[in-house]
Image (cartoon, rainbow, N blue to C red; front, side, top):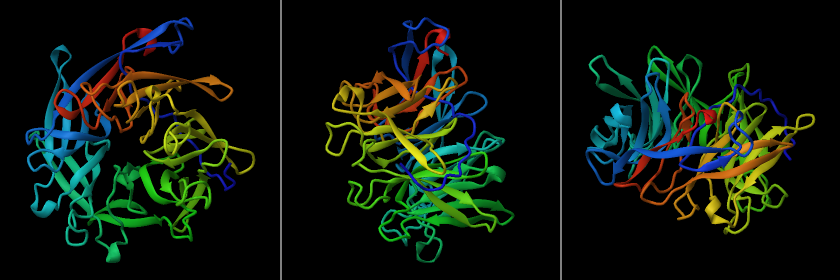
Length: 443
């Protein structure tokens, strides 16, 4: 149990995502307890591996606009082979049409970035994201330090890309580099994110964008404050930020470099930010888990996420877990493993991405490994009361419909679930998939 002070105030529940044809008993509140709820799996787009006319290896959580169009990025493909931004638009007969909005590395030496990591959208329809590579090639040989970019729609249907920050622009690369997640959008268009061992904000001003360093991790001996932050930040209604670090935390907690932490960043009246470790993972305890990764979800009075290691036995370092952090007595934080992935590989192993909630408080996620064919699963969890959760595999991938789903799911207003797979599918380059509830009571 964590013993550090706790400042969070949680906002509204985040909305969910994910699924395939499966009978799941008792998930519809208006249906009898034993009534099955069906999910229909379909592929919306199959990326073509190695194509210059299409992206492949989709990355990052999908984003909807107000018209029902889906947007995302691919790590690879496109004209220059360095990733794309794509749009999927619903068409007649249930078909979806793909449009490539931008090809990365269209500027000399990849000044616009290489290997994009997903998108976030503002109210005006502009998209923001990061690239892991590209940008400052001279400082980060041979691939570059990464960028933060903006993609804006024009009146003629064309989209314009602007690089708003190039990492390693500060002396001694104090701004970090190699971001692996999209930024988080705050009030006034401020962007919060992580690159390397740094948390940062980018503030729009009349001269462009101002970069502010919020916190540098592992600045304490043995990194009790965390090392290698992973996944996007999440922001509550009071402006506090929450995230995960894959390493660091307790010395001697069962991991050579620490089992990872969940942290909060609190804005101070001085303009500085205070980092507080809410929970440090430990593989020696009864709720053993290690390697938080993929980002957090805020739901009611808790923080929820996954760990790649710990949890159930049957894997070299544990098969992974879904965890919950809630307020304890006083200023403590209670951690509970609400599902441990284990030796039954058909139930999925090694989750490396965040979870999402639907309007009823059901939780959904994916694992990139395990399942009937070892290609990953989509799972759902329903609260049963008294801290108990029912777990079910909603879809098990078989290669031809995708391999390795490793990004957080999303949903639409009808309760359909959407996600991507890193590889596989009919054309070998990954897919965008939909899991649609087929009964009205399930929506």
